[in-house]
Length: 107
Image (cartoon, rainbow, N blue to C red; front, side, top):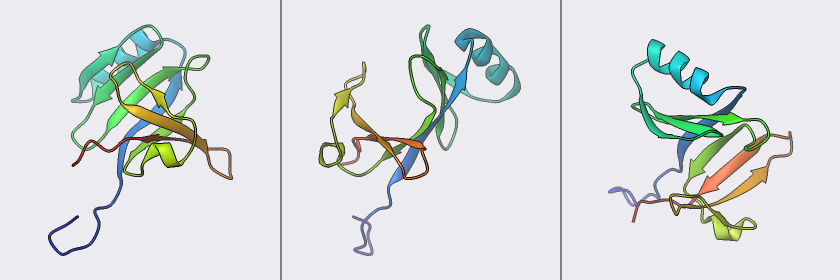
């Protein structure tokens, strides 16, 4: 809840884009932009920017998507848990775009 009594807006946490080689993609982005590697393994990496994060994902392991923090994912479908313990659910909008709804860490 905001000071003016209105509910806070949901937040876009990350945008996930597909790549063929996570290591090469991390190198390309970090050489060109001021960002930091928050996580990296063989199937995906998370680059933290000032206002949002960029996930680099391999096609066979993770869909291209954007992640939203805010709504309770348990009200939207089958909840899964990331390696870091964050609960999430994947939704597909009417136009075929994948949206990952993450639990909101704000109290």
